[in-house]
Amino acid sequence: MQKQLLALSLALLLALLSDFSTPTIAQQGQSGTRLRVVVDLVQLNVAVTDSKGNYVTDLRPSDFNITEDGISEKIANFEEGNGPTRTLVDIPEETDADAGAVSAAQGRDPTVDPLQGLNAALAGADVFILFDTSNYMYRGFVFAQDAISDFIRSLETVDKVAFYSYSRNLSRAAPLTADRAGVVRGVRTTVAGDDAALYNCLLLTVKDAARYPGRKVVVVFSNGPDNASMVPPEDVTELAQSVGIPVYMISTREAQLEPVSTAVFERMSAATGGKAYFAGSWRDEKKAFASIRNDLAHLYLLSYYPAPNPNRGWRTITVKLAGDRLKKCHIRTRNGYRPQPAHLSAVGTPAAQSNSVRDR
Image (cartoon, rainbow, N blue to C red; front, side, top):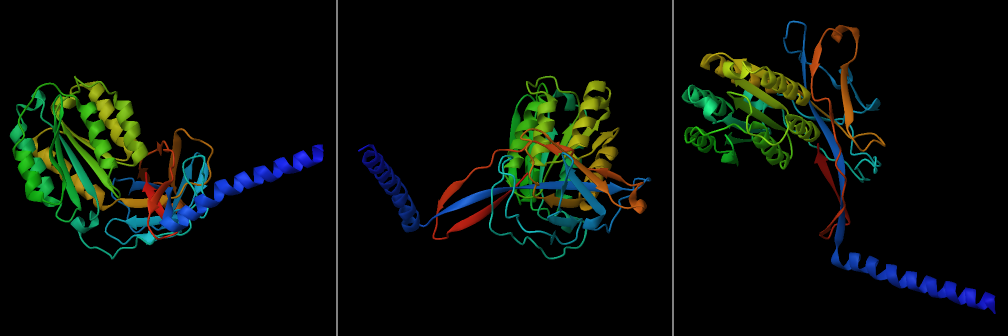
């Protein structure tokens, strides 16, 4: 009798499982729902210079060694300055699900045509400019506006430019757009404000930039220390590192007189792969903007799909050059990131499955 009851219970359980699973599969087939999987793609902007500070060009993917928490990584995409993007590996069949990546079925081919010239080297990049309009800027306000306007006009073939200003609050004077004239108008309409909340407003700027795919750069023009932020600079630095956005800082001599701000600006730019400049005059300001434009034109863009890694917290990235001929060269790039959880989303389309690559 007990055996009969056990057999009956097992039969009922199998029937319930069958009733539960079958409609779900059928509904997916009828509605044409597809699963979109997210695969982390870590992008690195890498500057390579020799012992004299000159940019080193014509390097190959084999000249770079990348490790993440000591784990060797394979370069997936490679691009130098104004050259084409080279796809070296497809999206991996299997990645580290615990760290935020899930399986994907096929790769993508982002190969683009070769572009020539300095401006062409920046094509596809989005540049976010953050301008200090606090009361620190009263004396050199017009000169700073001129330098920023010239910088914007020089970015002829950059994909889009955004212009923000800040004092105590952030003003999105010109949201990300391809209209250079509109961005310059945004620069010209800014007025001086009160206290400076640089780190609050820089955090918001980085969050805005992170919403867009592809290459992003934030350029900050500051004339003094932060005296009104609630956000510590370390939080801003970590976010910029994690989303892969270099931060370039241009400060005047006034900001350099405050040692704490000088140290923070240098650490933040170095940690994100950017650079810090301290301009003593309006001519130096223009030279700093020209240097940033030149730097962007000589960056190597490297990307990789992280190998399996149980670390869900901060991951340290190390980039080195291979071979004795390059051992005296210097590398500048971000030094790590914090992965975000992966997610699955359902999309109602006739396709069976699709892939989505998330840049970080």
